[in-house]
Length: 408
Image (cartoon, rainbow, N blue to C red; front, side, top):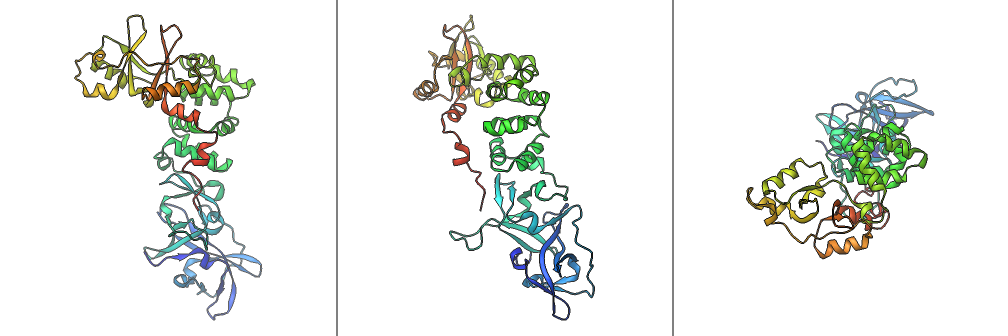
């Protein structure tokens, strides 16, 4: 790779002809999007007597010192029109949000880095630091890690690469959506929609405002299909926020098993243990072996966070003990799970408020807390520490403290 030049070096600089006379001014550079890791420059847009014209890169010299010179004798006088697959390096990238697909952050491009790659000048990096901004070395981001939004490049036929986006944690993708504009957020949601499970995971991480924003554009049937893939507690929370005239249709569109779980959760106040709990967890009879308990973990449909503990039930179905998965893994498969389980069982009741739940989980150093009915005859669900933290943190905490502030 050759020495790096900055896009700002070229913009609005005069361009001269073969005789050295000024013939116009550089308005933008044009790159071609395709299979190249770094988009090659195919030419420049120059302004001559009030008209924007295109000059191919092969007719230009002076890239090395930022002073372009026209080598040909003629210029195509037709007004410049962008062709499909072309990127206006300044118009489409500068001062726009771009996705850093490695770090899962939005980047604001304040300059673009150019260099020769394989003998051809190309876009090689994005500089997120404003000119004259001090406070540490500037980190230039490799353009291979950057994804422009389709709305920024309207004729380039861009698609956000699902495979690269899917490498990010759903919470990071949700952060991207929340930091982006509505149009940009829609592009991200459309990309993750290629994987319905990932789409549901991202929706679970979105704040309520953004969930409703993207649900509003969907039909009741599409909304029900999305909620069917969400965890029941998250689906119930979202149902309560949807306009009342749509709730019934969406709820009735859920599969029967999911609908039953959601309806049960809707019976509890959202700020209580019952409203926060998940009805999915791993439980086995107290007479089971360690091997049986681990098999229950392997086959459970519950979220991973809820599977850190296996609950043991007596003959009447009452929970009597809890076996941490770590302890089960360390034990012999033929041992009785009851022998390594913790009892009596620490638990909460569905009407307890979240402060009471937090106190109990803290006192017993638990990451999964069982919710037991008032009569102690049945287990209703579990509360995981991540769900509890999300409820206890101040509203808007992710935007204020999260990792996805726009990089500059």
